[in-house]
Length: 304
Image (tube, one colour):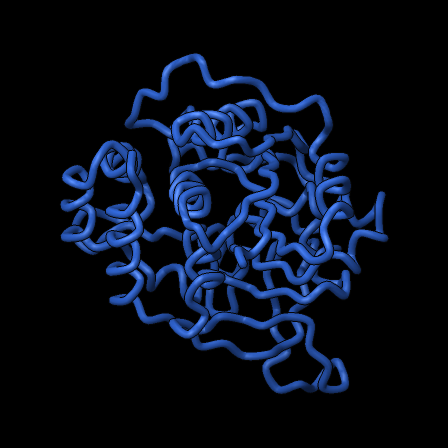
């Protein structure tokens, strides 16, 4: 039986690759994709989700979400993902419209319609925080949250803060204190899960999907042509399908919401500050060779 998931995303090149993998794997049943401001503005992230759903001819509802963080001023990552968020491939202009519901309304309705669903946020967690504040009853219907973001070893926005958490640290704090089981798929593993130059070079020969991904990835200003490009968000999907490729540790994670360390995810590695309690399963290592092999195999299976 396919795992029911809901994605909350801010495409973004690596988000696009994650959505590609999720929409085309028979072991995953994508019930809804919501968009949030993050890598680029929410109008662009919503359009990018629609482009991907249309590209794969999928009947998955798409809802537009928060245009800005809860408190902190919005700061995008267009320098990494380009002005559109998905440069390098022409998706055309006819890709449909989001549903009339807001992301929070759509998330509430989709979650309450299921017995258990897994949330997969790969952008800032603003939509998730707004959902939990407005509809706390959804928490008991969520099996787990597998979230790309955070780090316990160093950041990419400051020395301690990762982009998704840094974008809306107040939302991240709400999510981590929600009581819902969380898997933190952060920079500790995503910076190891580089798509190698050899992997990227093979993509165009694997059909139109491979050409599309190759176009996006070669416009990605994260990583480089020598060592490869980190597919941060794809790790959420790979974890769901192959958790055995990850090493994890149960920890309590706090989020810094102010000051020069804003956006830092601080793990109680000694179990000293929360009476031994934990609120997250933190991914700390990955089989990067297996990740590359899986990525190519998945693209090759896609019929388009």
